[in-house]
Image (tube, rainbow, N blue to C red; front, side, top):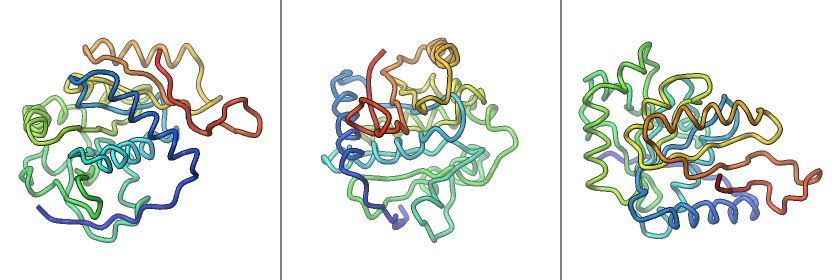
Length: 222
């Protein structure tokens, strides 16, 4: 397995505490909740950052974690964490160009491995319904304590709902004041149709100067 080095920024203490709370709430969701997707209603709600830091939080407790970047349309992981190496990714595995051992990377964070999105593919929905995605999730479940999947926004693209069928639970990341209650409920129902359990929601990008929240990030169940 090849290794990559991530540049991890310093975070606000309130953010770190909120991520730890999110990790704790996932743990209390049950021992059978190990494959978890994070999605949103639309783009730019912060789901990729929440997914990364949640994976990081689990890894720092000694859990073996795989973070899968399944947002083939609009991946931000390689640029956000200053990855300089050229890496293979999920799209190359799902199209048969690479074997699974060629697309999963260990990192400079102990216990954290990452499967990057890879180059844009024109038909990701078809790729996610194929046998290779099913095999990937089943095989990773035998190796890792937790698998976190950053999916495309379910409100905009169907891929997130397809990926939900391989997961034990889903977390919705919702940008504060950006989407309506009805729209969130539609996304929730679409994920649940796949048989995936909704664990809760992260209310993200809360303006603490105008809110009674004591954290800029908040996790709560439905």
